[in-house]
Image (cartoon, rainbow, N blue to C red; front, side):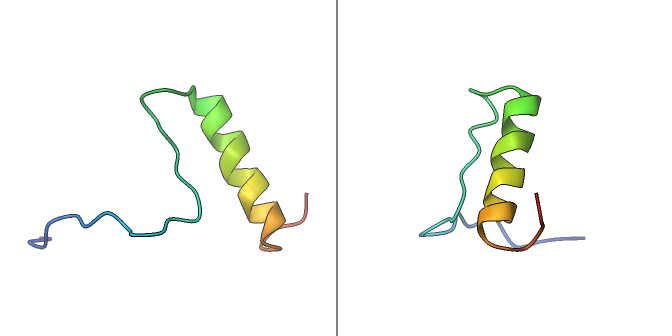
Length: 42
């Protein structure tokens, strides 16, 4: 069980406003950031 409350990061590298964008747009933004960081090849 997790008992520590969520703490929002001070300087997030990527913010996905899941209440404002579709799931498809969110996935595209996440994948684009992963490619830009060199974590995956796109």
